[in-house]
Image 1 (cartoon, rainbow, N blue to C red):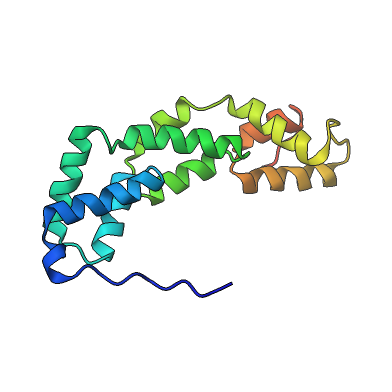
Image 2: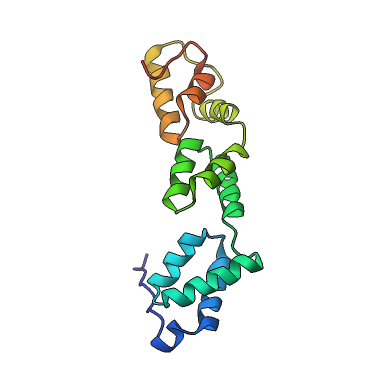
Length: 165
C-alpha cells in the first residue's frame, strides 16, 4: 500500500477562476454527495479563493446540485442500513456543519429506530433475548456504541431492562 500524497493546491490563476472552482466542485460531486459546508472546506483547503468558492456554492445550490436536506436524508438512510442509530448519525451530521433542525428532520424521516435496534441486536447476538443481566449489559453497550438511545435499547432488550441503572 503506497502513501497517499496530498494534491497540490490550485495555482494562483486558477484559485480565483470561477470556472476552475466550479469544475473542481463538480468533480467532487461526481464521486459522491457533499454537505455544503463540507464541500466549502474541501475546496478552500485545496487553495481556491474563499469568495469564489462561496459564489460557486451559491450557484450549485440554485442549480440543485447541492442540497443539504437531500444530503442529510441520504446520509441517514445509508448509515441506518449499516446498522447505526440516530444518536451517532445525528452527531456525525452536526459535525459536518448541518443545522440542527435539518438533522432532526432527516432523523425523523428515517426508519423505525426501535425496530432497527431490535434487528441489529438479533443480527449480532441471535434472535433470543438474554435472561442474564451481564449479557443484557453487554448487548446494551454494543447498541449504545452503535448510536441507539436508551429507549431504543429497552425496546431491543425487553421492556424490563433499564440500561441507565
